[in-house]
Image (tube, rainbow, N blue to C red; front, side, top):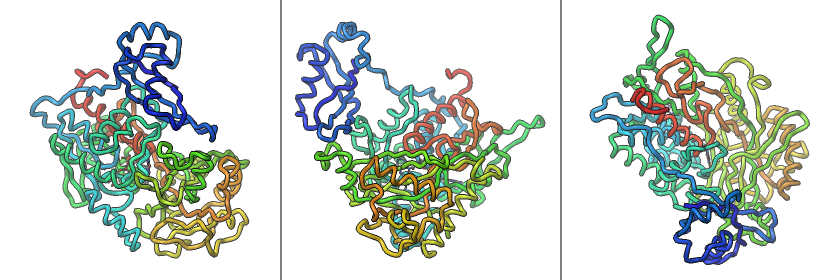
Amino acid sequence: MLRLTELRLPLDHSEPALRAAAVARLGIADADLLDLQIFRRGYDARRKNAIQLVYTLDLALRNEATVLRRHQGDRHVGAAPDTTYRPVGHAPAGFARRPLVIGAGPCGLLATLLLAQMGFRPIILERGKVVRERTKDTWGFWRRSELHPESNVQFGEGGAGTFSDGKLYSQISDPEHHGRKVLEEFVKAGAPEEILYVSKPHIGTFRLVTMVEHMRRTIESLGGEYRFGSRVTDLLIDTAPDGARQVRGAALADGTVLESDHVVLAVGHSARDTFEMLERRGVYVEAKPFSIGVRIEHPQRMVNECRFGPAAGNKLLGAADYRLVHHCRNGRTVYSFCMCPGGRVVAAASEPGRLVTNGMSQYQRDERNANSAIVVGITPEQDFPGGPLAGIALQRQLEEAAFRAGGGNYHAPAQTVGDFLAGRPSTALGEVMPSYMPGVTPAALEDFLPDEAVAAIREALPAFDRQLRGFARGDGVMTGVETRTSSPVRVKRGEDRQSLNTRGLFPAGEGAGYAGGILSAAVDGIKTAEAVARSLLGASVPA
Ligand code: FAD
């Protein structure tokens, strides 16, 4: 296969035009092009009146070697890389050492799936419920303010990204094409095929639910085992006379003990009780930077028109997104995060008396508002000194303040952009209707955000307006608080992916501080499964 990149065609090109453009670009006869596959399709919308589609194509040619030779030195023509996934090994028949995976989010799911595919019959422990029951609990919270601390947006089968926009792109470097393996597994589980080639794939909430169920059935058919309602409250750790520590298993809240000397810890960023347990047990944990802020909502139509001009509404472009960054005078950086086109703001709390916002959408992304977190980076050194868990204490403090500001019933405190910039609390909202359920209470961001964050966001919004016209419009709505942007801790691991001071414990995914987002967490899960397999199979497996 030959790979051709950066092939540009007008947005409204006909289907045959793609083939014709590839043939012309390579200078070959049409008959010599045997097969054409779209590897990636993106767009370039910098010139709104002449938006282009930008293709990466994989082409089967009659005389590929000759064509490659002729285009030597052309950086857009080369041999297509082999992206076939090859497992690191396979458990011998009757292999009895079953690994444990804690957490059924994207990281734990992919780790479990890979371990099952390699024949290790893993056991996955999930504190929450199966995804259908979890969906009922989560909607119950959104509709009736009834929070289930073990079954919500953060906890349960599928992990934190289940009720999300389902964006499946990431900035991680991925020379071994693990991301491709994730997307292929998602397609097998029911995701639309297009996620394999569009430049910014997304799935949306409803499809994620079905996919997660499908993956469960696959894992079980391969000998893996699920245990729901299984909150890990302790780790069994042996300490040798020389101080070396080895994990021996996990204990559950109901007193059950499961033995294993290979435990993947994929608990996500909201498992605060688990981080406390790790610290108590002496597992090496350190504080790490994260970000705090608010969700902002605008009409999606405004974002579409601003980004796509006359092409707004074009099906291939879909609902427009944005990515904004501003470096403030006070040294802070404010940026948009987890932007959800045509979606809604969701109540994402997991602890009673604390309030958190986040965003989600459906596959069509056809709701009226665009939403995004607008957040400010904070660091342990500058903002929360005081030990490995100080970031969690700060998150809790902010979430409690937001809960109070919203009226103490899980309604989110909300302020219009106009009032925020004018420095007055909101008493009413404008044309942009907030989508957060169960409801909002007009308030002021100062009620729950630290002064420096408020000052930074106040400076950033007009700067964002210069990049995306209308961003600082007076009736834009901000709700809060955003605190779960990434993990406030890192459970440090070494090159072999095992905890720095506890052998057999494999911290992974977002909670351990090694991923941010569905795709990167899933890739981390695959790599961790490979490390577990290498350790279980011994030196016979190449590193
Ligand atoms: P998680 O998904 O958090 O999974 C951890 C799992 O561990 C949970 O199911 C939890 O119940 C379980 N667990 C925790 N503690 C224990 C314990 N002690 N015992 C047993 N089980 C335990 N990312 C994107 O890339 N795109 C998006 O569009 C996107 N939108 C999002 C929208 C929302 C509303 C939220 C909340 C997040 C969104 N994210 C998105 C972020 C993404 O969901 C996370 O980055 C990703 O889920 C992290 O995967 P993970 O497997 O590391 O952890």
